Image (cartoon, rainbow, N blue to C red; front, top):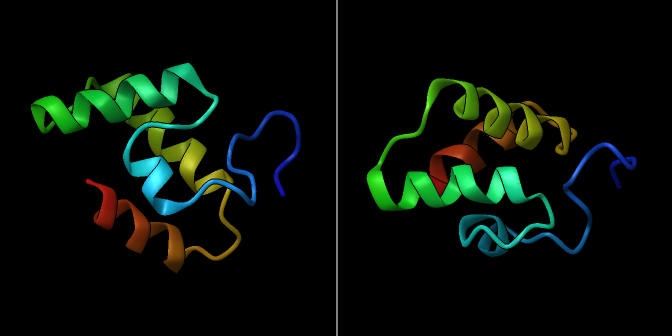
Length: 70
């Protein structure tokens, strides 16, 4: 479980992340932009990636999940 500043909690599944269903409105907006347009603004791309990486304990797993949801 991530602290109050993180957003990925045990109940956040890969499907929920893919569908932009987290409680973080900025992360959700960035994910929706990726789904709709296939790209996102540079700042939001960094925010999106950092939030995802900060919530997962093993570096290889976040990278694999990033590729799966994009």
